[in-house]
Length: 395
Image (cartoon, rainbow, N blue to C red):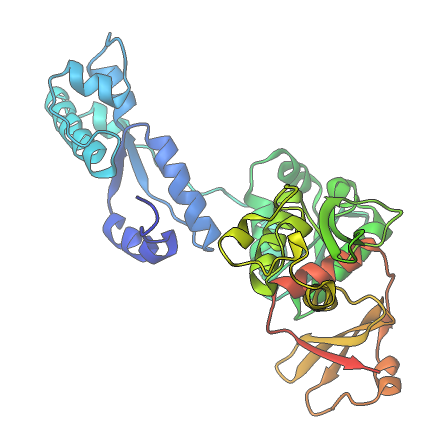
């Protein structure tokens, strides 16, 4: 049913239009209203409407019912309902129930008094002042206490919007941040990759009190390779082992499995030799003629290993000298993430009119940064997600 249904952003404008100057009526309205507000917040829109809950109204106007769930309530009241548990069926049943409740409210006061205003979350004046001074740009932000201590570091593609979320969210951590936040400083990066790398380094360096969860390693699983007794290169997704050098890393096992499944398809690899299909004979893909037979020695190890190495070389920058070019802080600027001999060296910014064709010139404007397993994971996962990223390789 959902496969061909529209995404929320496709119908969001229509929802705003049809609910303008209206009161939302729903059975358990608080739930439906919260869902709408959450979805609109993800789009950066503050959705606020008055609402009426037919559960609460029914408890007042039709007391002593055995159940106030929509299905049981309308059945006990003799209200016909079709297409139960479908949007249209439940909505029509709610309309019929609401009409009955309107009739029962002879004084016309109960329903008026039950309208819920659903006010927007109110920002404190000091938080409003902080937000007003922030730009809607990509970068790293620092939330400070009154004495200047950094209590939280984050990155965002829209710093103003993200800080607004910190100051309006009602979860435990956000409330603590709201209580202690006195100022917010930021550093523009233009590039999300630069922001991710800076965020990781700054959290490790400053150890802010509310970044505890992010101080740990940001990945749990990795892709490893080994050569079997028949000289075929095998691939395996496994938990990170500090004693081994991974080809690339993943935030969780599911992410790694998804990567391997796509690699099998893109590079015509064997399911058996990638750990996806445990068998002592041929893999499933060989049976449907989508594997060339490495699993049973039908394809030579030389031919098979060439494709595996193509995958490894594309997803690992081990021993490579390269520069990743990404967005800059201004329109005429670009960022450069420099990797030398497979080691992340740092980042820099250059003007578009300036061509990078000399490694020594490149090094002159690079700000050194620490290389660690987290930075490797951040760079590799970003490159996997952004296929059109410009990468320059040097000898």
